[in-house]
Image (cartoon, rainbow, N blue to C red; front, side):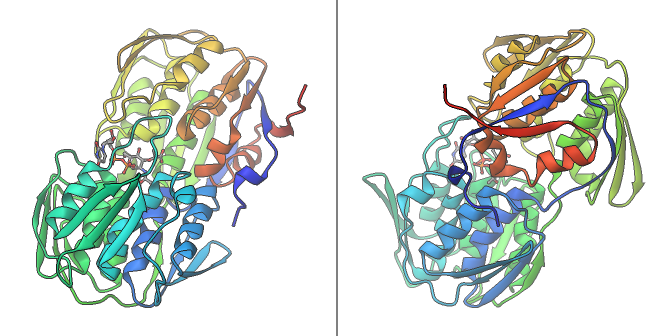
Length: 432
Ligand code: EPZ
């Protein structure tokens, strides 16, 4: 597994523009499935094997979190063996949680297994304040007393086990759906969660829990029903392909007007991205049940994008698509409805010559004929991917800093792009 990128000296990624890509890209396991399923492994009073795990910094951080509560984790070439037989403590250290909010997902399993969980409030991040009120409200409905003391959420089971309940989520939060579904697997009785998130990663987590013996119905719909069981058993589970990595490479082909193939993918998970690419004029061909070919075109039409919970257009693809729309003809709009501050890449794209005006959470993009390479700063994970894509299409060289964002969520993005013919490489930053 990757060491935390903090150990690496800061570098700059130098990206040569006017790239032409060709060839095939292997898609790694889904980051957002892996992180939730690693937390879910805590539900099992035995050892589980998780395969097709991406080599990214966030997975390493989650390994550190699991080890911090006494769980044995061994990594072996893209597979993790997690032995959660003995969880030695229910408190997760702040310095680990503050680095990655997904570590908050352990609160449900810890509470269900131990009857108590003490997890620091995850900090906000670049894209928003990222509250966890829906997680807390749901855990209280399941019979937990929850207090927040000095930035630490302390949850205690009022009885010996959590109690099944009927829960309505004010917003179809992915994390809250996952936290509550995991907690309910070991609760007494039936839990019904209404207005759930329907993301494929929620379904993958449900399938993982079912492989451990959990009784879950309805994952992928607005209503999930869980019948609690006393304990879960070991399993061996493979993670689905990362739909956001796949869609990122689809945009890489489109923005460089190249033709590439990607696999493995699950086309049904890419419906919104495929529809929008075809709407502006790119061509997407399904070569097999798990392989797509993307043919970029010289000119693209404008379009309008609004990010929504799945199956709507994914917020995790908003920045990447915006980079592509800066080169489309006419006026496009991108409306970010899921996070309150996920448009910071606009300023950086404008530094590259894009013509984008912000009106609240709407970006109005007036297409330009070309972008120009420039020094840019990545502000968050998907913004960093968007700037790489823009750099590949621009005239001249782009130098991107803030590479730790990229390392968190993409498995060997630069190597995969170089294998397609892109010219980009890291250079240690020489302090003036
Ligand atoms: C997951 O984050 C993903 N992360 C995010 O991917 C993704 O963007 C997001 O879902 C939406 O699809 C992981 O799975 C590890 P939410 P999560 O709870 O669970 C508000 C990436 O780039 N909200 O669905 O944190 C929240 O503030 C990352 O891979 C509450 O108000 O997302 C946000 O505005 C970024 N109260 C909205 O809901 C809560 O208790 C959606 O958040 C929880 C959430």
